[in-house]
Image (cartoon, rainbow, N blue to C red; front, side):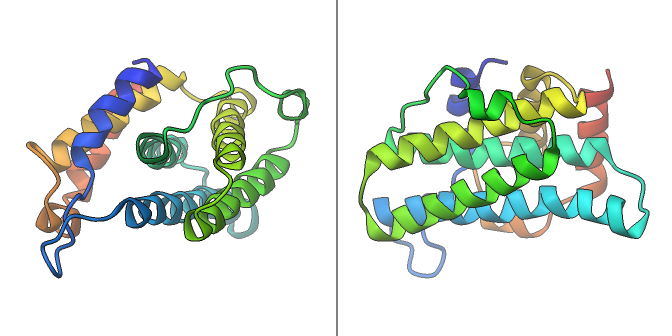
Length: 192
């Protein structure tokens, strides 16, 4: 699945209406949602490696790939809301990285920058740069860790979202998730 197609399919699961007041989320609220989600998912990705490195828990590559797919979901939302342009050429500073902790540092830094920019509503050129750095850091992590190809990760993420939200986003489906069924979907997509 190509990234452009992924972006179109993933957005059907965006929460567009505030469940508290039934009003559509504003553009700044949607930007904040995207940047908060990036921070959350980057944290979950790093947490998986932390548990493996420091607690001796077996590294769950299915979960790693799920978190990468979830980060791409929030990148897709950010791109849709802000019309961020992806710098297609991977910067040399990312190509040269051979240590995943350096990638994690960039992911945290650039996600933090997008959050700050979403609050301040300034410098969309900086947004493009942060967006592109996050995208290319994930591609480099996939290469370094010898994970599934990006297309497979994105398609499996869409399959999981269709399982969770058969039609469109719903608050009840977001809260009451069938994690076992989602794991089966992830394994079926990523292990084939």
